[in-house]
Length: 186
Image 1 (cartoon, rainbow, N blue to C red):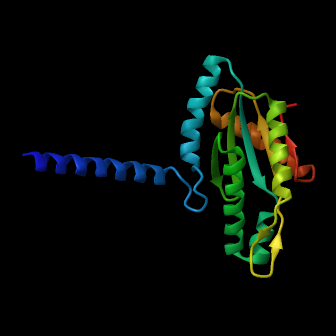
Image 2 (cartoon, rainbow, N blue to C red):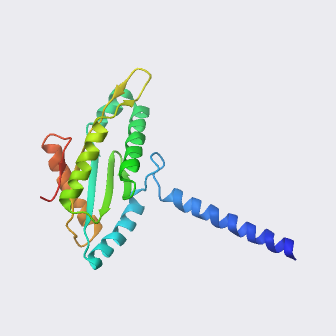
Image 3 (tube, helix red, strand yellow):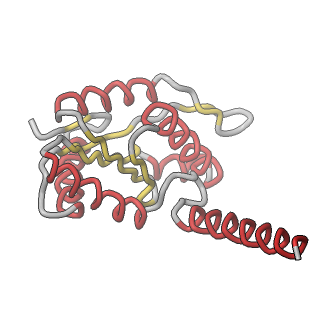
């Protein structure tokens, strides 16, 4: 019967929509709505293989908010969450065309395809300056500014994890050199 046929089609469409919604939620960080580490690594491996086979540039950016623990200690975890949401929104607004993820705590990663290391360093440095100029209203009385450090590599290593480790090494160099810095391959 036609009515039963349409009812079954409608139920199947609704089930597929719910399945896609659940899959998307499983791939995202609950606090920031950015992709999570698992999804980032899966998609990053695909992007790395594509870049290797096509001979195109690919960069992995590791970002860590500077002195984030002090925000939580001084203003509380709700303020820390607000800072993470703010920073994530800025990442999406400015770098939304790239693959972005919160990989843990105050650590974020971005994969940028098609740009040289110097251009990615310049892009992330510009983003760093943009973020530093923003004011975050964390409580009724308190406002603050944040900064971050970043490490960037365009070295197409064996796998994404190796690239992430190298970008992390550069990130820690930026932290040791005084924070609020971007360190790349050059």
